[in-house]
Image (cartoon, rainbow, N blue to C red; front, side, top):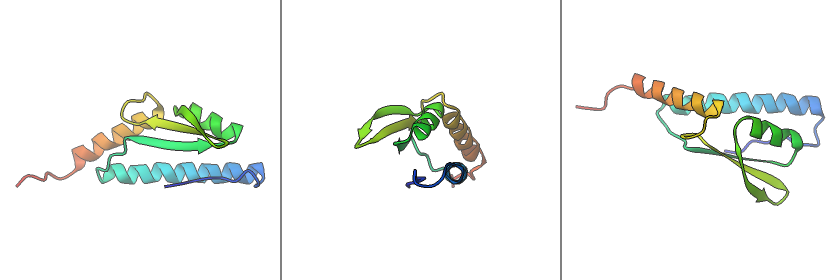
Length: 103
């Protein structure tokens, strides 16, 4: 899954698009957790100072460069980042609510 905003778009629209992308991502991972689908790591890249700051603030770790882009990783299962903790909580809730598969 890929998401991006374009630096060519004015800052107001870019912020709006960014918020929509993030809220869509959160909704998507909630749906996955409800289906008991586990994602162990999230990856992201950014070239803009704002994007890099957002990723660092969200708990992503810098893992290197891809061309001009800074690459980031968030280890969902081990991170203390708020997003990771929330996802693990959603997974636990989904598992607790899942019907038993035993016969």
